[in-house]
Amino acid sequence: MELYYGISGSGFVCHTINPRLFKEQIAFIIKHAGDKVLFADLTFLPILEALAPQLRKLKAVVMLTDEAHMPKSSALPKLKSYETLLAREKDQFNWPELNENTACSLCYTSGTTGEPKGVLYSHRSSVLHAMAVCTPDAFNCSASSTVCPIVPMFHVNAWGIPYLAPMIGAKLVMPGAKLDGASLHQLMTGEGVTFTAGVPTVWLALLDYLDAEKKTIPTLMRVGIGGSAAPPIMLQRFADRGAEVIHAWGMTETSPVALTAALTGKHAKLSNAEKLAKRAKQGRPLYGTEYLVVNGAGKPVKHDGQEFGDLHIRGAWVASSYFKSKEKAAFKREGWFNTGDVVNVDEDGFFQIVDRAKDVIKSGGEWISSIELEGIMQAHPAIKEAAVVSRPHAKWAERPVLVAVLKSGAVLTYEEMVMHFTGKIAKWSIPDELIVVDQLPHTATGKLLKTVIRKLVLAR
Ligand code: ADP
Image 1 (spheres, rainbow, N blue to C red):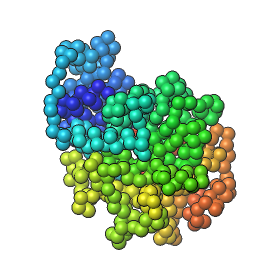
Image 2: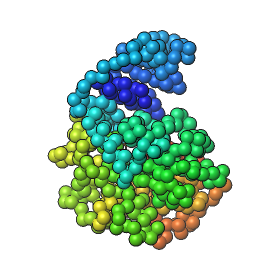
Image 3: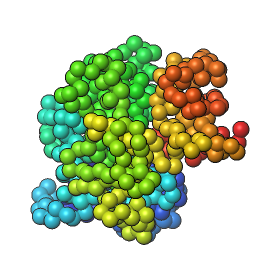
Image 4: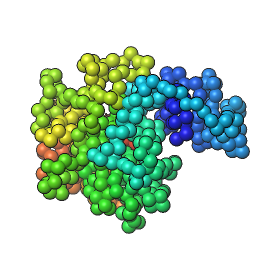
């Protein structure tokens, strides 16, 4: 938190690094970003040591600790102590008056689609984004909230939460390294957390823990879920515990939050099931962002909740280029950023992410949404986690395969899987195969790693 404000406030750029990236990717982004000083928690010393040859080019590597806890490292003999550096300074500092368009932070996409790409944020875009995500139809936070981002501070600036909490005077609770169900439950009940946010994988673990231990988090009112699609059953499971899920969509390139699924006045009369279906979509635009969804012919799609197209976006906190990059493909349409997501839009203006363009399963000219199939399967009592990917097929081009992790002691047959899908989706969308695995691979930000899952399917 101190670095977020100290670095940006004094006119430098705070470049957060995801420590779960491959060593080569970390080395790549440190060099590409032109980083000068690296700050790290003690737990990351082994990563730093592995990167030692690359880090020697930096002005300094600072450990976030005091002199007494400074590690001795033969690979990095010149490590500095953060507290010692601070103690040498005066308490007073004249913060510079910066132009609002000055860069303040830098994030790299996790590189699931090639080399990591940098997105540079300005003070202006970060403040506008933070104000927008506070609003009632988004995270709905105020001075009376106790806010706990489970999304790490390196994942698109923890979705703006480190900015919005001080902005409104909310209590901010940081989870540290332990993100298992028991630790989160203890933290949230102990601190009286009212709002939290994170990717679906984290919530699967917490919900399973609450179920197994018959526990609740009485203060929890709202859970922001994004990064990948929140399965509808997850909304229900939180609702059963008195917490409302706010499903949000965004990307590194969009700061990240751009769509949130809050109902409007006209939905008050809907049944609970209809409300849930609506809120399981990724939602409506936050004011400050604009959208264009075009079909294969380049024409805007009908708002009928059926026709799908490529989602383009622009706005006050949407990137207009990548940092120091020649990559222009995503910005080909003048003034717009092509998200790479395929979406439909319904008559109420609710967007639904069908899939990432590269994950859509193309079967006999029809498109199958892996997200929809995963959402349905996630509701089956035997399933712990479900992934749907394509297998190349001679006749149909691609066919869906369900790769599943089962709950301990549970059994699932192919026939039971087919029965569970029957009536919920078109028959030709039902996966041809069920593969049960012990665990599924995830990206550095906790998303299903579809590239590796597809390889795993091919190897069977
Ligand atoms: P990367 O592109 O490296 O995975 P991002 O964190 O920027 O890193 O990921 C953005 C992508 O995540 C979006 O393009 C979209 O495909 C997916 N995503 C984010 N939120 C949701 C959501 N609520 N539902 C479905 N997909 C989502």
